[in-house]
Amino acid sequence: MRLVGGVVRDLLAGRTIADIDLATPEPPEEVMERLRTHGVHVVATGLQHGTVTAVLDGASYEITTLRRDVETDGRHAVVRWTQDWQQDAQRRDFTINAMSVDQAGILYDYFAGQADLAAGHVRFVGHAARRIEEDALRILRFFRFYGRYGQGQPDQQAMQAITSGVDLLDGLSVERVWMELRRILTGPNVAVLLPYMEQTGVLAHILPEGTTLPRCARLLEYGAPACALLRLAGLSCNAPVVVRRLKCSRADVGVVDALSKPAPIPEVGMTDDGLRRLLAEESYDVLAGRIWLHQAEQIRTDAQNQAFAQLRQRLHGLERPVFPIAGRDVVAMGVPAGPEVGRIMGQVRQWWLAGGCRAGAEACRAQIKQQLGVKAVQS
Image (cartoon, rainbow, N blue to C red; front, top):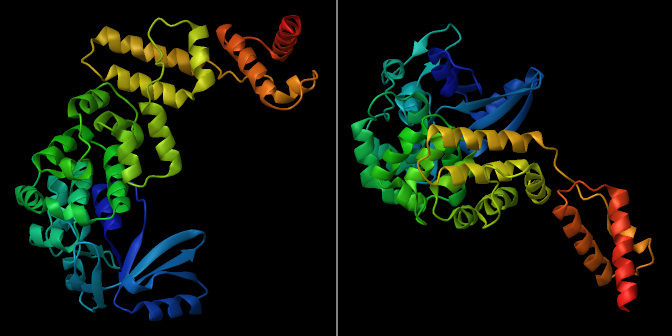
């Protein structure tokens, strides 16, 4: 059994280890039997791909049987077990991900991955075009890994293969595309990656609604947080349509809709009362996101950027106002449950907002009485 893939790469790079993956020549059924014999809890997480998960002291370890590809279609692969470690490494995407280490600490590096890692060279194992034909998601994975480990110009063979094979992206499920795009957008060196993704035609395929690279570049330059949805809203010409096409979660769709909808934006020079009114309607994160997007709409001076930063700081320092009464307060004053309760609540809420959301429950209940008094006089 050996450590394989990302754990070896990150150990060599001196980076934090996220997951520990192992490989073995034994078939998965035998692996499961051996683990259970030693009292280790095991889960059959992907038997068709030869993967089981061992759970030991609360930690999970994926163990995969050595494989070779029998058939690939750009999305899925039919595999067979093998005893050949190099054959298994041959089917991996990049040289920096194809290394393994045995229990004695010996490094097995069949494709010069260690040298590539040291040089910041993200390179496909073997023929780049063939690796992409096997799984088109490797196009997006190339940019993700280049952003994290690459230095200098990207590998030219890889760039040519991506440009030639970019149409293969159309065969991927939207869920897989979003999974990788999200990681790209939250990773390092996004401003470097995006022009290369545009140059190869990748952006046009995964974001056919259109992109605004200059706005996104300013968003990154000005220091916006590494939020995938915010960066997508800055990059896409129509982010609400994108998140629905990519079948993002309901929560993600809601965030993008809130960021993108035509709504009041906190402005430099706005009073605290004005900011409180906006906070009563939207969360801080949404309002701060709108500020970032508004800031990125054009080139800003240092003084302007500082003013936007101070605005976000002021906004963050305010407690989010909560309307202090509910419909039961109106009903308690003798109004039957129904549309009239909603009408009165709406009027009192508008009064509360106009006052900078400062009025407490007693003042709001007094306003209800005033509304009822006005109605009685009118009757």
